Length: 453
Image 1 (tube, rainbow, N blue to C red):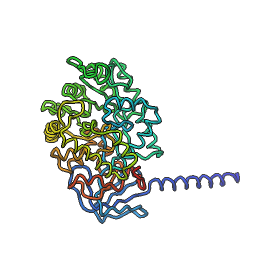
Image 2: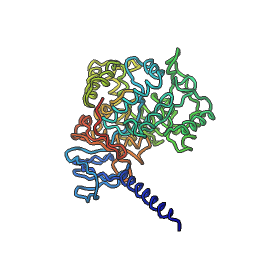
Image 3: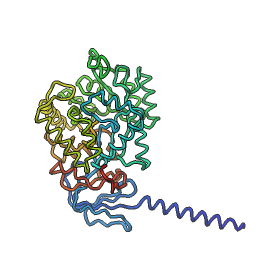
Image 4: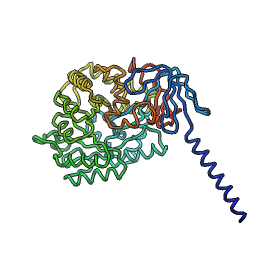
């Protein structure tokens, strides 16, 4: 036998041993001792629980006193409330809405890619430190969301888990500057292209009026910007390929059109009549509520300068934003793009949301272009009559169900991703405690030591 064979075998054993050591390190067991646990299912908080995490996933959730695996890393949160990470169900991380209106957002979308990416990095960090562990991104120019997702996944930048749509789908006379697509077969090709390029789901923008250009606000007669054949093709192709479809639809006719086509969820849904609620029940579709975007006219670029240059903690930013919205409400200012006052809008909206909740429609929450304000979305639900625990569920387990992602995120249960936060306080009793986030974990990775800016 050649003397080289034992040497090669020894080298192989060393390589295998190193690989096993690295694998064991990557799969280190983490044990969280929770003083209180809100699991995201809607069940009341329980006292003293133990969460065992192996790799990216939760391997068990046990009562206090459970046996802890030897060699585990222990994170003691005995004085805090532990809960699933929050889900932002409608986000555009590279865009910020303000009183510059639609034109201001279009200007941001026309900036150089590096400028847009830099803003996206900042906004993702803001949401992460506010306890958001999943961003459901619903449309970015130039595939910004997919590139940001790659950077987060690689560890180059900190951020929540990104579920991206790539550019949303629109026909001619839709919401520019996204590329336009026309005709059923072209719609199918666009869905395939989105999947090929890394999208996780599909977003369509359905409107009954021209959203931009010289004829902005002009209604499309009795229809929408899509034909029935076009939107049917989008939904059929996406579902055939295993992708969910979410639709921007604000008015009743657009909501009805999208639901009848079989979309899985509706973004905004600001016209929830009893008939519309019946359709949501019939089609088993979810609603993504977006309250803070209705206040965009009351925010200035200087407010975002406060976010970037002055706010030292998540609470600083949330308190700053809450004060702006409270002032607008006290002065009964007009709602965005409407002659309706905010107070009138909220009175109607509270009734709509309560009706949807009572019918069992899953409701999620999203900030749209209003960066770092998901806490205020949940506070809005409490103001609408939800209990704090129900509002938390909209931002976790129920929200995941509304978006069709509940198999992997949204609750603290065996097999789910270890997307976990801790809060100093009891947010199921006082929803404002949510801004007191301490631990943030995404897929078993702890983000500690990050400053807010």
